[in-house]
Amino acid sequence: MSKIRLPARLENLEKLLQSVASFAEEKGLSSKRIREIELATEEAFVNIFNYAYSEQGTGEVEIDCSMGETFELIIQLIDTGIPFDIATLSDPDDLDAGLSERKIGGLGVFLIRKMVDEVQYRREGDKNILTLTFRK
Image (tube, rainbow, N blue to C red):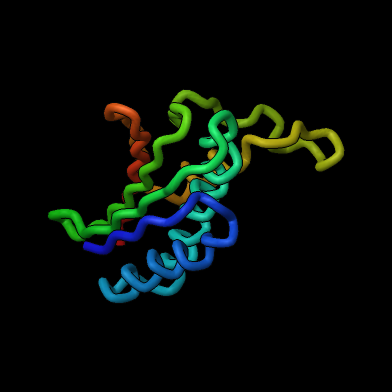
C-alpha cells in the first residue's frame, strides 16, 4: 500500500503521479498500462484541483494505491471538497464534432471511464472517495 497526502494544487501533480507510477511499476504493470493509469489519474486530480475546493479555497488530496485480491491496481483519490459523483455525468454528445463545434469540458471524465476498468464514487462524512480499478 502506498499513500500520499498533499495540498490540492497543480504544482503537486507531478509528485502525485510519480507516486502512482512507481507503485504500478513495483507491482509489475506494463509501461503501456502505467501510461493509461497516469492519464486517468491526472484527469481526476485536475478535476479535484479545479473544482473540489472552488467554494472554500484550498484543501488537500490523498491518494491511496493498493493491489486487490485478484491483482488489480486500486487507486483511491480522497478529498474533502464539494461532493462530485462522476458516475452522474453522461458522455459528451458531440464526440464526432470538430473542435470548433464542441462544447468545452466533459472529455476528462469520458477518458477516465475509457481507461479505467471500474470507477466508483462514494461520500463518507465530508470526504469524496473516487476509486479507480485497473486490471493488468
